[in-house]
Amino acid sequence: MPDGGGTARPAARLVVLAGPTAVGKGTVAACVRQNHPDIWISVSATTRAPRPGEIDGVHYHFVSDAEFDRLIAEDGLLEWAVVHGAARYGTPRAAVEEQLASGRSALLEIDLQGARQVRERMPEAFMVFLKPPSFDELVRRLTGRGTEDAEERDRRLRTAHVELAAEGEFDATIVNSDVETACSELVDLFGQAGRSTGAADTQTTTHDIDQ
Ligand code: 5GP
Image 1: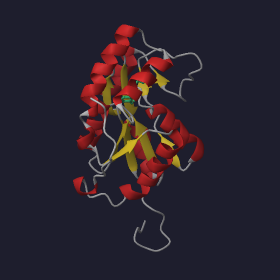
Image 2: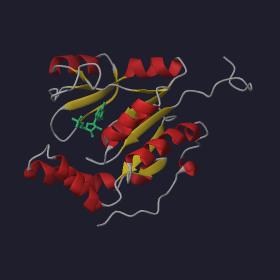
Image 3: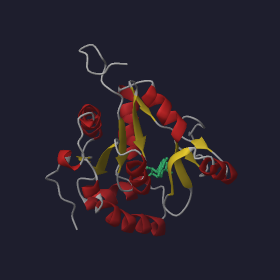
Image 4: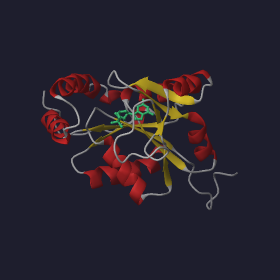
C-alpha cells in the first residue's frame, strides 16, 4: 500500500508507555482506551491472580505459570518481566503485529524492564516515559491507593527511585499532573512518533523530581 500519497492514512505506530510504580500509567492508558478507539491497547498476559472486577481477556490474560512458560518457549511474547518480584507479565507478540499490520496504532503500558526489551526488538517503537510531578506525589499516590502494605510500599518506592533515573532512555517524557492532560499529550505523540529519528526527538520537561 502506498504511503506517500495525499490520501494515504498515517502509518500505524507502536508507542510504549512506561514509568515508575503508581505514576498512573494504567489510568492514562484507560483514558486513551475510552476516548481514542482508533488506538489499540495491548492486553498483557500475567501470572498474577485477577483482582476483584478484573476480567480475563479485557484487563489481562490471566495465565498459569505453565502457560506463561509455553508463551516464552514459543517466542509468543514481545517482552516479558517479573514485576515487583512477584508475578510475570508479558506482551503477546502476535496481537501487536496483527494490529500494526492492519494499520492500527498500538499502545503498550508496561514496566521499564519490558520497555527496554521492546526498544531492542522493535527500534521503531516510540518510547514514552510517564513521571510524577514530584517524588512526594508518587509517595502520596502509592500510599493513597492502599493496595500494598508498608513493607511492599517501601520496596516499590526504592525501585521507583531507580526507575526515575531511566527517563533519559526515552524519546519523550510526560508529567502526569493531570490524567486528561497526560492522556491528550500521549495521543499527540502518536502523530510525532511517525517522524521519530531517535534521540534527536527527545523532549525534555522542566519539572524536577524532589530528591
Ligand atoms: P498490576 O499488577 O498493578 O496490574 O501491574 C503491575 C505492573 O506491571 C505495572 O507497572 C504494569 O505497567 C506492569 N505490566 C503490565 N503488563 C505488563 C507487560 O505486559 N509487560 C511488562 N513488562 N510489564 C507489565
